[in-house]
Length: 475
Image (cartoon, rainbow, N blue to C red; front, side, top):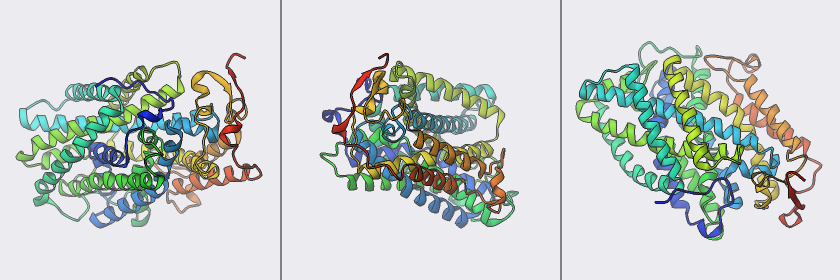
């Protein structure tokens, strides 16, 4: 299979051969991994039992899908990734906001997947072979997983799609076996010595809804376009693509996350997940658990790393996608080493999910508002001005930046960060919300309202035919 040569350029119509089924396969197969499963552990680690954990995850996931899935339609029309597509709203240089947001999201989830996958693999091999469960063993395992992930990401979309189709079947079988394996120890009560993280039920439940449920779909706000850009709107309608996205996210996220809740309760996993998960596994399930940790981690981290390569390629147009992917892998692996030896998993996951949700939500809201306003009509060629190191086009705005959109995102993100609560930091606006983390709602509403107010008097976006002349960047 040849290495994919496409970066963030426009995908030609003849190469847009994927369909809604491929989209569902990639969303299902890539998410059936420990990097997503571990988010199901968060509610029990916060002190919630079975049903509060389930309702928090389901509620957050449904809300997140309703908000995130429509973003898939943007790249369906532009034939490029979402960060580049956002240039229609932010400007061809202002779309770097989306590239940075996407890079941070993918970086965090790649590191988390390698971290959890490596820990489970080391723990499993320790029980099977007597491998020392040491820092050196973990470092070697992180490196091996990262190397395999780089190979998958460098080969690109077609290989990742094939891997996802295989994983969507194989991982379902492995998780079904895991359901049987942990059944004798299952309990509906929260793990021992895990009081409500925020002191009482409702604030803790809302935190779990955002950190465990909502963060899953939000992780895809910049990723969905990586897949839908390969779907042709001439062959597949927007409604089918939208429903395929929603269904793929729903099944692809709920199955692993609820499995994570189930195994966390069975293993009595309080402040740690990987260790108790391995210790509670019966001997016959160790090999399936090892296979799930290895294959699932490479599949999920491969997709995230692929997206990171695209976002870094968008930030540094001179870099090839392959070079950008390798650089992103090195940075992600460095984050794994630092996080594994310096932070505890619960605090790192919670802080990462809440902060990036607050930062990414206003960008997504502004992009969706722009998509509705232009009725899905884009000048695909004008979106590529920055990548060609040129100037001009209908999305040039002011020196390549739409000040109104960029300022609206900055205000929304700032409000979100002021309203967030994490184990490391609590925003001052929590005093106004009764200590409840409303950062997702406040950041999205603020960013959207400010953008709508600043652009209220403007007419509809110019039609693609009205594109301004393009000039070389040194003109």
